[in-house]
Length: 89
Image (cartoon, rainbow, N blue to C red):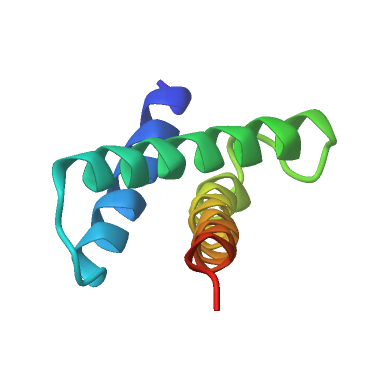
């Protein structure tokens, strides 16, 4: 059940990020939700495996939120850099 809640946190963060963005397309919605879920799941797994927190601690709820946001911001920074390099001078 913990993984389901973590995935739902990622879906929520991805959906909110898509609402904040100016352009709304189905492929971007799916991408932001998948990135949010991936960031939340990876952060939760890494945090528990490294012993930073247990699965029952409040940090196990907050860390996936931070991880999902970090994944979305990282992707946004990388994608914008790639897009600018493709446009040229």
